[in-house]
Length: 170
Image (tube, rainbow, N blue to C red; front, side):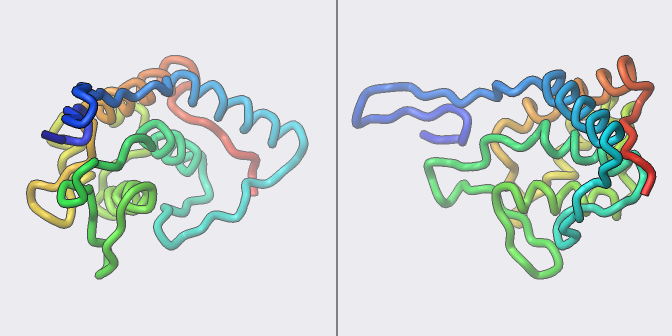
């Protein structure tokens, strides 16, 4: 059996488990250091690919990117029929591009995925809606780990950074 998070490998007799190991707190600290470094050097944020990424010229982009990075893990199932896919504007996406497109779609649907308070208080229904797949039952693996990471990102942003990172003014 394989649900993307835990599966039994009959060839080796091994039960395998995939777990998220990247702490959103560590991601928040690294993003803050990067933003401070850019500001100190007078650098501008890199040009952003807008095809599947949300584009904004305010601090919200940095917060959105932090949320994206915090849930960017473990997309693949051992069973290709269980692979998470989304359809956005007629294009079927999987993996990282599906993740980025889902968060962009969430913004278009008026979900404030850049807002620390929204992230900190997310409910399971929020993440199931945001990451809904091309098939009704299709969700990315480790959905509740993603929810917990998004909540932690919101809490850390709110507690340590007054709810937002700042890019240098463009």
